[in-house]
View (tube, rainbow, N blue to C red):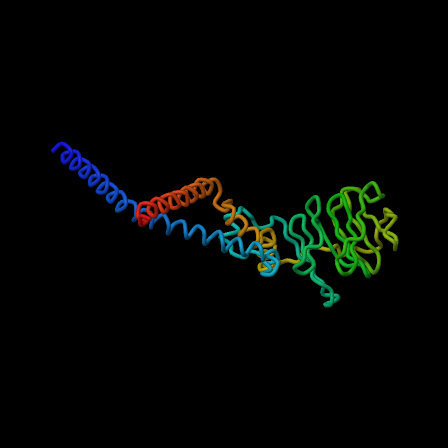
Length: 266
């Protein structure tokens, strides 16, 4: 009788453990599915962005600027404050010149990033000349920088404007007007015989180019890298990525536990 009693107690305990185990399994399965779905979306995002990063050269992502204004606003990229467009009506074969803050553009290609805001630019014979307040930049006609002049090389200080007459370059400065020799080595302070046509910005700058200049500061490779690493959404993404990592951990543990409890006995 005593043996039968202990056997009955043992069966009852086993039955209770089984019922408890079934309750846990029933409660765990829905959460396992939900966390699995969230984790799958997270893994899909990482896979897609990772493949795009690995093949960014093939897709041209590093050469594709972001043109969406809302995304440029999100990155805090403002429109340039100083924009100038220099006409090339005398020779339509020459690329147009633009200035946006400290950048010099030949058509839609940046050829110079200066240390300060650029003032003026123009073509002189087979050269391209640009100035800021303290320096003069010489390029070949294709836009390759050849030389930079400053006060240490004899360039006048406090530059205000640039003019090109024939093959001669003139500079207006805070101390007067200077003319360069044909080699642009020596500068002579001289008063011109007639008023010079200083190279000034066109009255109206192409609005499309302004948007292009803004887009040049951000490409799709940068956006996808930030999305992949989680930097795109700032500090919030650090916690969000931690939650995704925790979800993956819970899916792994709950999946193993469900498999272990349901596996058939050997």
